[in-house]
Amino acid sequence: MSEKLTGMKAGLSNYGDPGFSLFLRKAFIKAMGYSDDALDRPIVGITNTYSGYNGCHRTVPELVEAVKRGVMLAGGLPVEFPVISMHEAFSRPTSMFVRNLMSMDVEEMIRAQPMDAAVLIGGCDKTVPALLMGAASADVPAVLMVTGPMSTGSFRGERLGACTDCRRMWGRYRAGEIDRQEIDAIGNELVPTAGTCAVMGTASTMALTGEALGMMLPGGSAIPAVHADRLRHAEDSGRRAVEIAGGDLTPARIMTAAAFRNALRVLHAVGGSSNALIHLTAVAGRLGHGIDLGEFDEIGRTTPVLVDLKPSGKHYMEDLHRAGGLLPILREIRHLLELECRSVDGRTLGQVIEEGRRGWPQDIVRGIDDPVHSGGAIRVLAGNLAPRGAIIKQSAATPELLEHTGRAVVFESLEDLDRRIDAPDLEVSPEDVLVLKNSGPIGAPGMPESGYIPIPRKLAARGVTDMVRISDARMSGTAFGTIILHVSPEAAAGGPLALVRDGDEIRLSASGGRLELLVDEAELDRRRAAWTPVRHPGSERGYLKLYLQHVGQADEGCDFDFLRWSGASPGG
Ligand code: FES
Image (cartoon, rainbow, N blue to C red; front, side, top):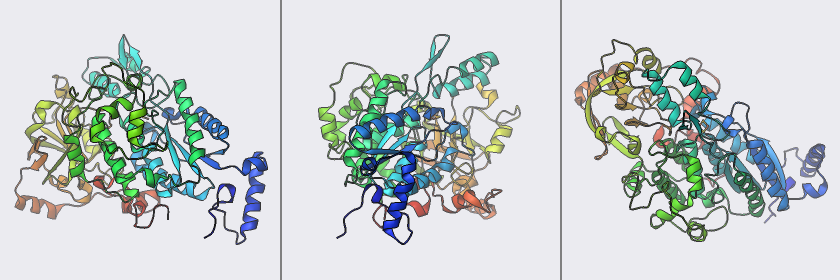
């Protein structure tokens, strides 16, 4: 059996002469000023996700330096390399559209370049999923890190943090409660530091579930972006990457089916973002582990929401850090976790919990007997309107609306919504159900976070703050309301959502897990025969063509079919 090649000798470019390939590689890398001693060390690649467009990643350069310090202290050679970076507000049409592209970049750059381990630095919503997806497929030992949550700001004594308060304050502005000057001043306070959104949005949820999966050194998910602990954690991550370099503690060995069940439990316990379900499904799909919506729902029934953070509760991520981060949450649900799962730090999850710092009295992480919400964060819905499922974040919903029947007010697309939602002549009442079509993975395209359909201005002005809303879109984890998302199959794929018309009755029963369109089958068949799919301009070429041909539905994690586990060993 041939010896496994490591360091600079691994993965040579193909010139038909391995000796020449290595000679050439070393000659070129010496332009970076490395000594032969440095080039003989284990190599730790570090993903540099800094971008001038991405304030959530503003601190990546100093994190890279801290990781490098850790790598060198442990005797390795750190080499940073760029991969795609994207910020939620700077990704057209959506960051979800680009997530799979970033995952391909990560996978192929890890595979193409010599590295015995990788440190993955993510943060903003789609970057952590893309890093995990790519690392899972490449299956080189890897340590996940995040940039960490931003700190909060304030306006006239009121604490503010992106982005639950972005939506709340914008809603007040739309309702005429605050004026233009005030909303502009608030805009200066919502994102007062570097780092990821300050609430339990997708970034926070992916950080916590990434740690729960075992891919991050314990304790790293909630450290604020600007805290010195964040740099120490980065140094530790670099050090640990050298220890696992070239070994068999690869992402596939850490992210087992049991580890995903633990991560899903944590998703519920933290009142996490519904987007994380899609992302975890995509990561799991890279390793041959399906995430069954029924099992996810079942996990939710036995996992109460324990973390009192916005949007479901009242605190912010920096408060969770002060309360001990993920550890006190794991401790509360210890009896529900599969404790033999391994962490990238080498210990089992059981050992991590056992050996972690003792807890102290605080009101951020509730006890299992005193939850914020008893029934899990997210409920899975089934029925003739969503044959392959839909979800509702019940912990962020209005309890009285969770059992509701109402008349549909339909918007055919985002453009239609934009055109008519605030029209004075829109026929709508607070009991109606707002329905948005063609906002799924194919429809928009890129499954935008447009599921948070605004309350029509004329109702908002009357003080209406929530209505039942349904779409095939996603919703920011920072949003709140009685909002049904991820309806699958989506309208653009010919799902029943495409057939809904104004005035149809729709019944939601969150307790029963049902979403029903109360229209008889013969009428639906007539409408189906007349249905035509949307066409996207520019889809004849390029990434849009690739995307539209291969993207999966929400229950498949919206990954490309050709990137999912193929049955060969990961990375093979
Ligand atoms: Fe980057 Fe919210 S916009 S984490």
